[in-house]
Length: 523
Image (cartoon, rainbow, N blue to C red; front, side, top):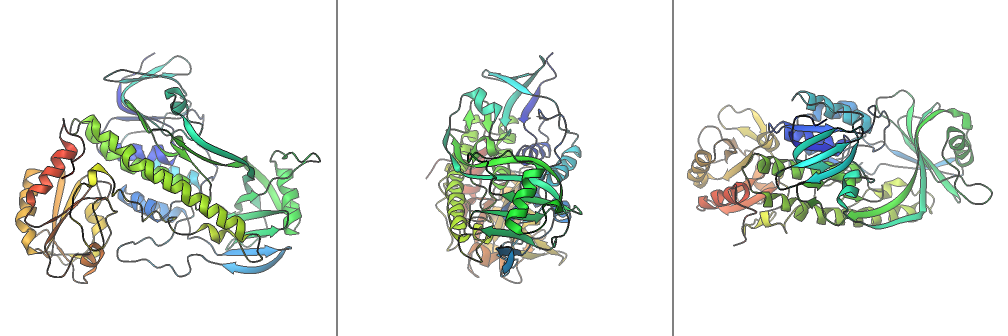
C-alpha cells in the first residue's frame, strides 16, 4: 500500500534524524521520519552535545530543556591498583565567552535528548513512525519511492538516511563505506545500575591489564555508563558482555564487590571503526550522521558531527524542496561536510592515541580525550563555493562560524544577544556602523521573508547597540569601520563586504536561492 506522498522522508530517528526533522518542520516542509525499532530506546549511548551542538539546539528552541535534562561534565577520579591517585577536570579553566556562551559539553543520556527533540518535533505535528523498516529504494527525476517491510511504500521528493553505521539507505544506494575496523581496540559497554560509588565523579580504574570506567547518567538515581576492556576466555576470545561479565570485570579492576552492579542493559561490544561514505548524495537521496561517517568515540564527536550535518543540510534541502533554489545547492552539503568528517576522523584518532598513551601512566585518564577540535567551535567552510566572498576581517572569513555577542536593543535598551537575532530559519544581515544603513534598508526590502537586517551601532530603530564592543571584537571590525556581514541560516557567514557593496548581498542570496542557481560563483 502506498501512503500519501511527502516532501522529505527521513530514515532513522536518532539525534541526527530528529535534528533534521525539526529543522525542516519549522520551515513548513512536509516531512516524515521512520524508524525500524518497535519502541523508542531507553539506553544512554552518546554522552551528550558539545558546545557547537548546544548552539544548534539553542537555535532549534530546545536549549533550556537540554540543559535541564543533563549536567555539566564531572571531575574525573583516576585509580591505580584500586586506589584513588588523581582527580582531573579538563574544563576547570573553561569559562563562557561573549562570542561562545557554551564553554563545555553537557552530559545528557541520548534517550533523554531524543525525547526533547521528539517533543519539539511534535509541536509541528510530526511524530516518529516506529516499526517502519526500509527494505528498498527507487528514484527517478522527480521522486524517491521507499519500499517498506510488509509491502508498504512511501513516496517522497527527497530522502535522507540517518540510520546509523549499518545504514540500510547507504547499502541500498551501493555507496562504499571506506576505512578500517581495528579489532585490537575493543571495549564492552553498557548502562548499569550500581550502588556505592560517588555520583559526583566519573570513576576510572586502570591497571596493567585493563580498565573499568563508570560515569553517572544524569536524571537517574543509580544509572551509570559502564565501559571496560573486554573479558577473555581461556582461549583468549572475548566473552560476550553480560551482567555477570561486567561484575567480574568490575571486581577485578576496582577491588570492589562485583555485586555492587545490580543490573545491566545496552550490552554491546565496541570496536574502533574509522570509515566514511564515498559520497553523501545519490540523486534525491542523501546521507547524514553515522550513515555517512563513523570513528573512534574519543572526544565524543560522533553524535555531535551528525547533529551538525543535519543543521547544514536542513536549510539547503528546505530551499531546494520549496523551489527557492536549484538542486545544485544540495551539492554544497557534501562539499562542506565531507571534509569536516575527514577532519573529525583525524581528531578522534589523535585523541584515542593520546588517551591510550595517557592511561599507561599513573594518573592518566580520559581527560586526554578532550583537546583541540572536540568542542566543534572551530569548524567552518572556508573552502566552500558558498564562501566565495573575498572580504574578510582580521578574525573571520566567509564560511566561518558566526560568533555570538551580547548587545542591547537600540530602541528599548533590553539585552539582546546575536544568537537571539540569528535564531530561526532566515538569513541575517548585520551592518556594522552608520554607513551600512542604506544597504540594510535595500536588502531588507528586496529579500523580505528570507532575510532580517540589523544595524550594529548603525542608528535607527530595530538595530543593536554594541556598548561593550563585544560584537565588533568578535567579528574583527574596527571601531570606525563600516562593514556588512551576511549570516546563513546555519549560523555560518556567507559574505563579508564593505558597506558600499549592497549589491553583493543580493548577488549572494540570488546565487544561493535562485531556482536555477547553484552556489555563488567565485569572483
